[in-house]
Image 1 (cartoon, one colour):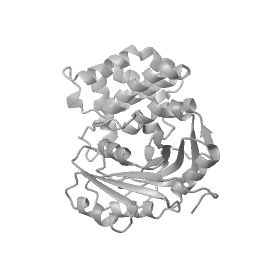
Image 2: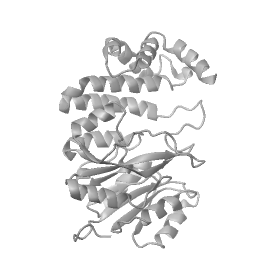
Image 3: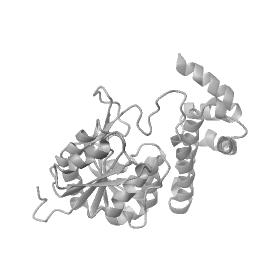
Image 4: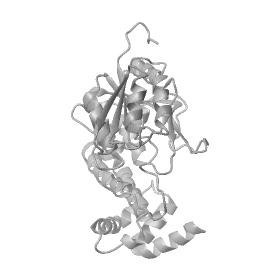
Length: 333
């Protein structure tokens, strides 16, 4: 449907696809069924070998708006970046191939963009598990639509209250002109978003939970067994260092929030690294220990860390292996 009397802007929706034959049809159907019809749906097959590589072509045969690109396996970021390179739309959105969206999502986002003149608009999201049960909200939806200015949005991210995912957003393509997702890492959305945040002038956030995250055991950021150590815990520490430098340069008023973010990300790392890897030979682990020691006073004084956070951080600073062993026993009870 048209918004007012203006012709609809073309919206490019990029879906990175890899060995996801069981869930891809639901994802693509939810995009094809949008009430906003002027869409370009870009499916980037990232070297699938389970039949998905054929399925994407079959799906494209059912809707002329679907364009398929096949490439060798390089990860989600490389697939997204290819999608950005070929996208013809004025606006760009992303959907993960195991997730699905409400039929009104892009119409609602475009209405918001038209009304407020913003360069990024964001819907709220919910999470659904494999049994169809709705999980607790990761990000609490606002009560009504509002414009979150860039510095406030950065603050929300540093306090783990904001949503850094590009999947919930519709963004002006020009924001990607000299930017791409970093490849070979996880938590790549955070890295890209915070580096373009100042240029956006603020993000419009709507309360409707129109993006549905499918919480699937075995997906990129979900642990399969207790013995696995995802590289995401290294990437979030690296992102914390990047964010701290960005705050020093552009958002100096957020210094305490940035320190809190750096400490919290390292707490997450320390509570997940296998004890067997907590060695003198692991330089990254040693760098985390050095950071915790250097910021012990900040841990005590920081107003944004909970009492429990502070206790764990201080104990991990003094006796990391012992604390991890006790934590492991506690988690098994």
